[in-house]
Image (cartoon, rainbow, N blue to C red; front, top):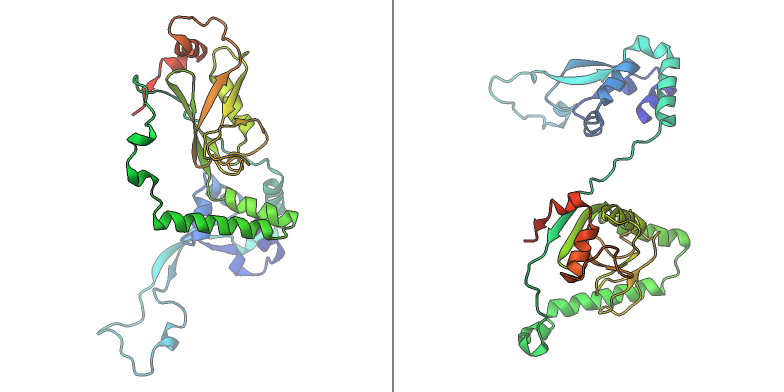
Length: 300
């Protein structure tokens, strides 16, 4: 839009009607599908023009007695592609204004994240939790790097808590944190030994995750809860506690689930049609969509 606005505002300036294809901004723009076709509809023509290999004023930058390479004369021009809007086309600004209005009023195309829904089969043998006596002594040893990292985190938390931040400043801090991650990999431990895996945008909410889980269930009338793993910061609880995730409007970043997290799903009440044989694993397998059960992969 800026390119067309400059031409409409300054139709007499040639610099706005010539776009160097090798320019990083123009190259990124032309990488979008049908972008060059749009420029052609606006009247731009792709043309190869000779461009000097030396930058402008290179001779002035050389020392007075400097010598050039043997037998070298003026730098041979090389051809470079440009998108040029002919001067005659700028006389009819109505067409460019209509194209600019088309860009400004068009509905944005928001790309959808490919969920890549996968069902994983955990190992048949359950992992036994080690007792304190079985853990090595260095497991409880805090290294100098660990201590320094903890002190830095506490110092940062104290500084932020002591600052008087306006609402706009707090929003900017949240936005900066969100920009650290674009996507979040969510794994949900189901009753039994099945794990449901999907990919989300970091800005998506807990309600988006719940809707995805519900779509993966065969019986969508069931009521379930999602539990956060221990150690997730920012939820105002002990780091060893497990708390139900209930704020459906909170983003995955605000919940501390980025860049990846393993949640736990629990059903409220008995599942319809569940069998007593096989326990909760059989009940869960009966509640996943059949097409997902046919594509179960081992969790390596």
